Amino acid sequence: MLRTLFSFPGGIKPDPHKEASARTPIAPVPLPERLVLPLRQSAGIAPLPTVRVGERVKKGQVVAAAEQWISASLHAPTSGKVADIGNYPLAHPSGLPAPAIVIEADGLDEWQERQPLDWQNLAPQAVLRYLQQSGVVGLGGAVFPSHVKLDTEARIEELIINGAECEPYITCDDRLMRERAAEIVSGIALLRDLTGARQTLIAIENNKPEAIRAMRGAISEHRENFAVITLPTRYPAGSLRQLVYALTGKRAPSNVLPTAMNVQCFNVATVHSIWRATAHGEPVVRRVVTVSGNVRAPKNWEAPIGMSMTALLQLSEPFSDTDGLIVGGPMMGLSLPLTNAPITKGSNCLIARSPRIFPPRPPESPCIRCTACAQACPQGLQPFELYWWSRARNFDKAADYALAECIECGCCAYVCPAAIPLVHYFRFAKGELAAAAREQKMADSAKSRFEFRQFRAEREKAEKAEKLAKAAAAQAAKQALAAATKSATFEEQAQNAVASSQEERH
Image (cartoon, rainbow, N blue to C red; front, side, top):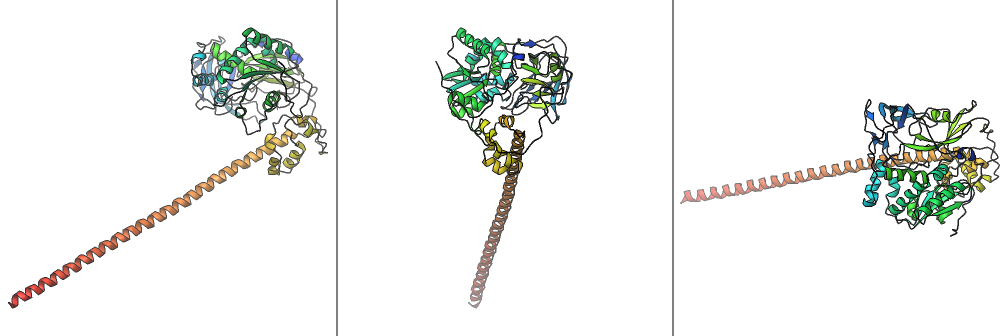
């Protein structure tokens, strides 16, 4: 049955650069000798280490446990010895270190005992706790804990499975759907049953015909009624808000979750990891990573979490003029120097950078208000206005122009003839607004504390005055009673004296 698709505004069609890495199957990597596991690999609170330096661990063993609900546990990607627990650099432009667990592999790759989960005979909350303990998070890049997304009382009308993969160069989801469609469909059925979704929609861009055929074949074999929806190839069709709108016509403002519109969305790699966790007892200890760009052998590698990015890049044989990495896609990824920072659950792509493929950006020129950025914005914003107010540091005015609705997709900067790095300005403005909001919150908190201290001082003063007044009143009453008693005693003595005098006369 044909389904009506809604067209979101703007968007761009950059050169996909996908064929080179998509033509070969997913390949396993040789086991690294050393793995660095950053504790914070999901949104929310970082898990707490459960192992000690020198302790031997098995593959799949919990090495850091989630203590809060918005968190996910971390597991050993191979067997070996815990060599260190300390601070190590992450894949971030700041280069700042963060807490991590280092495991030296013993070469045995020995799994801990694994048991499938009988999820059909468990309460939904028990399944969610299991997913949390298995470290399942969004593998499309957002790394939001999947059990938290499933923990909702909202009635889910549409369950959307995101296989769009709209960023250039990235093909890990494409290869995953081609090679493991049956497991993905089984995972989708599990999510359908957990959410009670009325209909399930699998969105794939039309530049992935093999993935579309594989998913439809697996759906037919499993006799499911899931619908594979073919999307026109247009960036950023895979962005959450654009995808939800394209399939359902429902618009999701920045402050509204999809569940408020009775929609839930999961990436295909996340769905695959959910199935591996429940059907095979395998926590998230590896992921498929696209390695492409300035390399001789672009490919998708199944890499253990914690593997060095440089070591993974070497497997695809980078050319000698490689001068850095783009972690993620070229539109929204991070540009870094060559680094030994580790692969994490959110690392879906490494692009070898070189001046030949990614020439230096030309100098920024003045904005000529051509409005090309507004025409390309998928959120229907006016980036040139946001730019002017951000540059002028008038952040409140930028907020008035719906800065919060910007998804930082980079379409505006891509089409800008003045080569203005618009997204950088918007991120700066958002950061300043967030800092101002934090300062205002701190000021309001300080004001509340001051007012409470004043109230408490006034209350204590009033209570003290009341206590003193009561004491004074009690003392006055006591004195009055004593005076009355003394007066009564004096009258009694006088009467006695008169009586005695009268008796003497007689």
